[in-house]
Image (cartoon, rainbow, N blue to C red):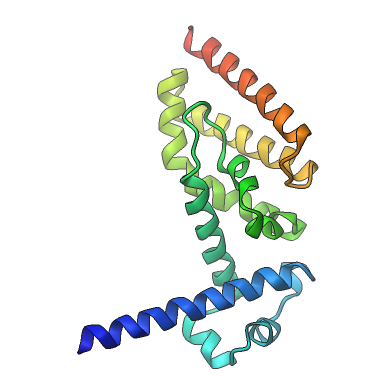
Length: 183
């Protein structure tokens, strides 16, 4: 009996958290993150403040949960062809695009991506390009910030310019990594 009750509670909890995250995404279509209040979020989600606070401590936790979701999904679309930062793959997730259009979130998102991807990409860069750990971290920082800036510049849209630039970037990265590793 306890496991059935727990499963129902878990399902309700998951549903409520989903509704809150969707409400934040909807509000981000109307205003910047730093202008959204808990009251506005609760009204959009059609929940009480008590319900909100039983699931999250603040709006930043909702943002973190959304970014974790986006990063998890983007990780499933990892290409073995090039060590491109996850922000390149996030362009395939239109439901999260609004997060990346908010200028007030750019620095926060870059840091979130950096900490998420660092354990995966740094060892690859060390191995593939014969770099020290510090050199790999700096190269990763360059790739991430550069990719983020390019995507931001083209409005996070996958279009002809994006496709053309991806092929240029892949050639550039492969050529540079080949030169670094002496291939």
